[in-house]
Image (cartoon, rainbow, N blue to C red):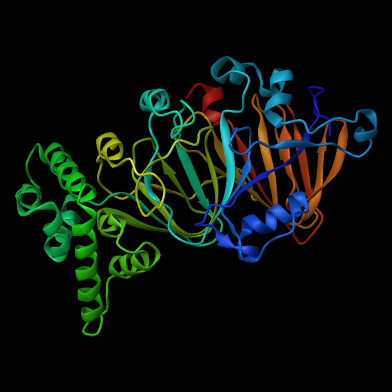
Length: 431
């Protein structure tokens, strides 16, 4: 697979993470892609959570030699990271200048069977500090802004609800007031929504009440959740429960007695339709709940967790790092670049994502760009063609494209669906 700059396109063998929240067996898109990409046998009882495409040391990709290349050199697998370090020009000079000889983004597919932890990702400054103090927990010094693009309906908790909604929660959920105390609750209830300094007061009060909630003792938390569950089950016989109340009961089944069950009331409940995306800046709380998505992020695996998890919780760090911004997150529908390509541009330099859906016989040109790309063939079969090479691409294939390579893709089946991750085009245009 050769590009116009003389460097070849490289097929990659991806990596899968079997975190316990993943969907089981072939229910998971991740499992389907793994079987297609590597030929691995799928265990129907095993969770398949994340399909990683990139260079991060927790899930490194390996180059797959093309036919004929094996004869040239018998050797061990070559990692994508190692190959890029030896061939840095494949990144393009601007990317090299800014991020050094590594891929600045990590590309994934997620199959979420049950809720992920309530978490946030540190900004660069905090990431460096956490990595220095607790390198066993925070394994790199990079920030991790990210974006999730729904493949199926995808549900998540993301960011804090408005002041008005928070007041309603404190009125309607007495179990939360029991844990945070009437003084903290009153601090929120007494804020005048028409006042000039409302936003600052709301942030201060929200920080106080959220920190109190997350810091409640295990004994008090278990008792409060038990009361909440009994009350909601009783009320469900008299009225329809709200979506949030139904969600909280689902979360309680997944994580009994977990403080994250109660804290869900504080977050926006987001439902993405296929083709909609959500971006998450540093220091914003979120928890993915269910569905399959394509995800892209800066190359990092730093996560500060505080609820809905059996893993290590760092409640003090999480509560102190959050921005406490309130309001519903922005949902991206993407920008149509052509009848076949939709681009999702988050406000971060490291990445953008394209979704490409081609009907049979149709072709599309991805113009040469000054940075690298990774393509995932998600459904169907077709051809990829550069200036001096043509090859077949089938679902499950992952391909690294060097900088400055024009690529023509043609669909051979009724539909060829691909996803591309690359450097945010605004970065090259100085925007």
